[in-house]
Image 1 (cartoon, rainbow, N blue to C red):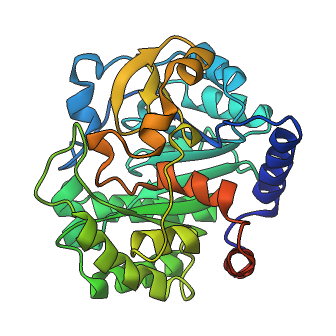
Image 2: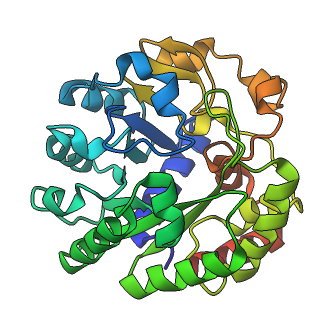
Length: 331
């Protein structure tokens, strides 16, 4: 199964609860940026530009767990920067798991071998390693030798019993042949799922390597076509949106971001303010403006953090969607 029974059960229970309580807006995934410090300087990274003045600052373990208490999302993505550079990352991850939230720890993999000595496999715990292509491509973006070190770490983590996913960003230079070879290679390593993201420019992330909307639609027709052969974690409805077959409105509150500066508003990609509390963030953000794409910065955005929540919340409106999602989840 692409989505574990444990995660599926948690999401269904959470959705039913909010439906019964008639709550209009609620988060699905908390993006917890424990630090923006990183041991790489990848080309096109927006965080090292946006937060260059506070790069070395970190959330305390207590602040991280307070964010979990404030935000009821059943899934927590622990990210950065490089979250494994946080000296108390094991306490943070274990604290989240103890609250029965599902954790996806996003890492470049360089520190993973040492980290898994302090962490334990759990049905609530997933490691997500960023791999942007085969060795030549990935090393051109992240640095020489990073691909080999990251994939060796994946092997070690799988041997230790951890659930491992990968995240691959598609750029202008990405070819279909390389993607298919990469997916085949990653499945050979035993990865449990592969997330694919379009690389495109946003407020703090301008670079000629990124895709325009037309290019995204062209590339992701191919991804949708091979998604039945590989453990692609993107939902089929979102892939149809990326290839221009479906229209989806953004759900900007679906993936709220908490970092050292506060609750980032309105979304993971755009920063207009940082709020002290989650409730202030939810109450003071002009959601309609961003949901409808009324802000010019939203023009080309097709990121999964805004549109996959829409699939979860609206994917049951057509019988054909329900059937396709069921088949996808069981593969």
